[in-house]
Image (cartoon, rainbow, N blue to C red; front, top):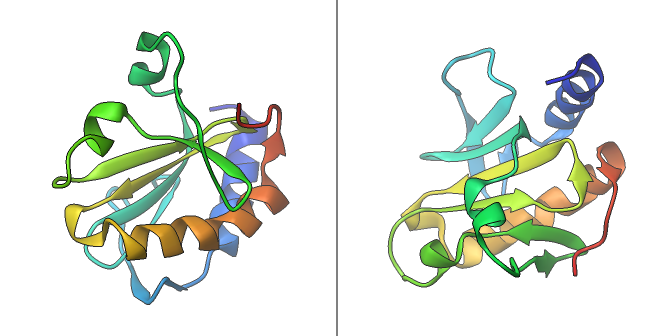
Amino acid sequence: MSADDAATCSTFLDDLPDELAGLESAEVSPADAPARAWGDGLVVTCGVEEPPAFRELIAPSCDEIVGIGWFFPPQQLGREDGPVTGTTIGYRPRVELEVPEGYRGGTSFAVLSALAAPIEEHLDLVQRCR
């Protein structure tokens, strides 16, 4: 990650609330990772690479949630159980959200909604969701 991206990620992560969608802040491992965690395994990481599954698809889908484009691997969304990982599309640096199975649905939507303003404020929009 470039120095500029690291600085942007640091500011972005510092701006995230201690409570997110009713979940209390938790520790991340390793402690110096460019990430924040809440509850039991919900993790936001900044400065991630493009997900491999994104390049494998002929026409990858982009789900816009509160104005932010997210990519979710179709094989994860195609099942009702298990965790799901979303990655911002069109913002730099990229942000990844790991959602444990128990937080899918209402909690994950609340988290995605709460992340919209900090993403728009701190990250660079390079392309809108198509």
